[in-house]
Length: 137
Image (tube, rainbow, N blue to C red; front, side, top):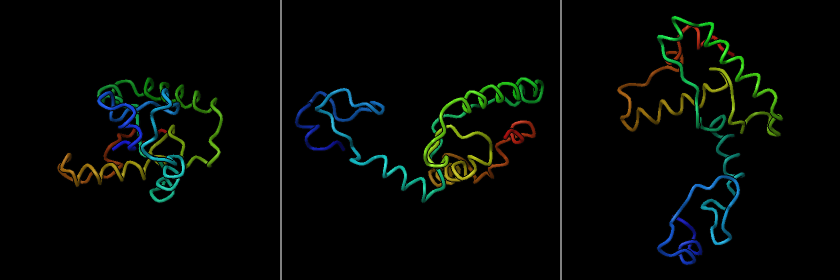
């Protein structure tokens, strides 16, 4: 629920919005006052930030053209290395590459998905990857 000021100043116009890191209207207030501190605390407790986006490859492509999968991964990884490093040693880095760098986040989402009955059983992280994709680091 938005802060009371937000509801009062924009009554019947907007209750909440996802606006990125820049608030576009001074009448809008953050739902979480110190979101950076909260995110850092969550990441420290859970071993990293949740996965927001992930590159996915069809099993048929990974089997028939592993060279293409590896090349796409290499190009994406190279572009990430060109970006400035995060100041927190990667703890809050949303662009982590490889299974190991994302293992804890994947374990959490598997657990949450199972508890919510979105998946029939708890899969292991390694079950999510074949020989080609699991070896990408």
